[in-house]
Image 1 (tube, rainbow, N blue to C red):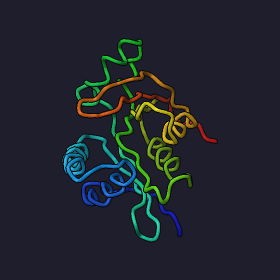
Image 2 (cartoon, rainbow, N blue to C red):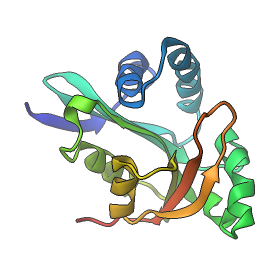
Image 3 (cartoon, rainbow, N blue to C red):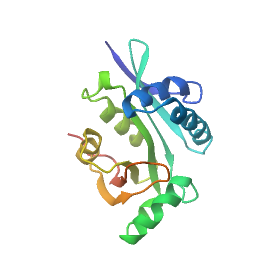
Image 4 (spheres, rainbow, N blue to C red):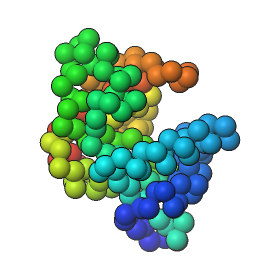
Length: 176
């Protein structure tokens, strides 16, 4: 199938995107309902944008992000962890990758790499930040290969059962 990466009206396609995220991230219906409200709120933030990957007309992956603000909930949670290791300056003048998910049937084909590099290539900010579950995983391997480094580890989000790592990279991202 031909893969197309392009702008995604995430507000209009939130259910399709969350269906991908639910399968990729193992979310139940209650978690999807909460995330639907979060995504809709995020897409109202200035500078928020999303890209989708479609194959055969079906959404198989998506990424979205925005210029970071210390007033956003995510920043208020990670700031103390970053501050403790002298990395809280990364919260300023950064583009945050809020979500990046690829359907498991389409993983390991470079789709996630294409999504994240394409969205960050158009960022006005000089660096990018994100959080990922703090374990060795294909996702963290991808981020490391793009130039992301660990800024803080063992970051605990309310209601998240596992700790996260906050990662950052200077833009443009490293290419293989």
